[in-house]
Every structure is written in C-alpha cells, then in structure tokens.
Image 1 (cartoon, rainbow, N blue to C red):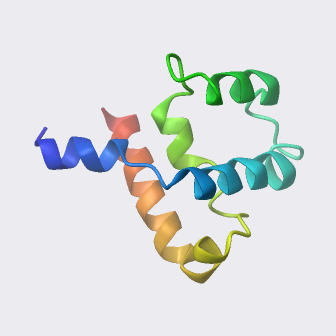
Image 2 (image 1 turned 180 degrees about the horizontal axis):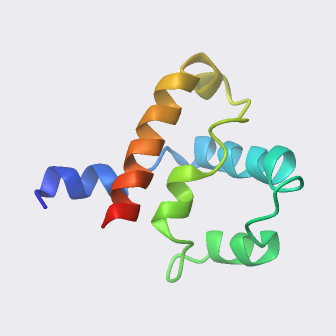
Image 3 (image 1 turned 120 degrees about the vertical axis):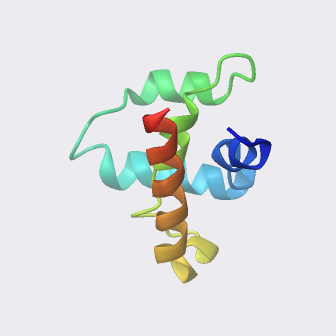
Length: 91
C-alpha cells in the first residue's frame, strides 16, 4: 500500500472535532444501538499507548455530530470517513 494511502487511512480530525464525534455517538447513536462499550472506549480513548481501533475512530459519530464544521460538510465528512473505514475493514 502506498504511503499516501496509509497516511490517509490513519488520518483523524483534530482533537476538538474527534471529541464532538465521540460525544454525539454516545449521546445520539449508541443508546439506541449499543454496539460499543462506552466505559471501555472512554478508557482507551484517553490512553495514548492502547487507543481504540482506528476503524472505530473512522466510523464514530459523523451521522449525528453537531460540530459546526461537520454539520456544514456532513455529506463530505461521512463519505471520507466511510471510505477510510471500508478500506481499513478490507485490509
């Protein structure tokens, strides 16, 4: 896999946007469709050595996030994150 593709798959939004994505996921999505253990995710989210899987970061919260930049470009954000998640899953 070319280095550019690897860097794209491991790219994440800045910390503020990531926090908004995580918060919206656990507030708006996970309660009705509990697929991620909130306590375990939060513990790993704060751990630099053993963070949550990159795939999970790429799928979390874009659909419901209320962060202004995400709301303004929701379809683009969702498309990028979905593509990255699919590529990671396929690997």
